[in-house]
Image (tube, rainbow, N blue to C red; front, side, top):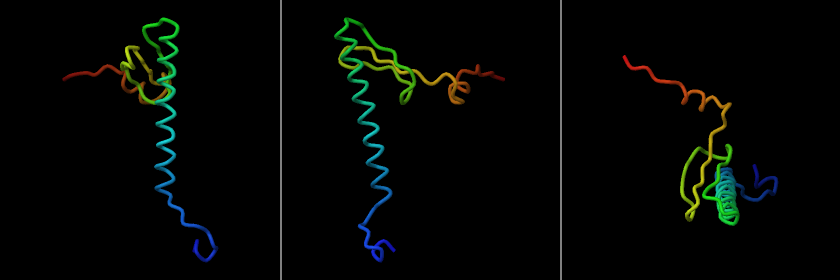
Amino acid sequence: MRTKLSFDYWSLSQYLKHQVKNAVNFISQFERVMADEARRRGCDGVVCGHIHKAEIRDIDGILYTATTATGSKASRRSSRPTTES
């Protein structure tokens, strides 16, 4: 069909892979910039709101923490106490 309409080849999977790669690179760059700014200001670390996933890690000696969105269903589920029988 695309050939009949004189359209070039286009792959949905390649497009999506490229979009995900761009998003991951953007988030990684954001984390690095935040750590660099914390260092520049003489801080030991940085706490970010929900931007990707919850994590605590070291970025070149700066503690980087990212929290989950407090209103999300996932964080409400994970905060429920478990009961053992």
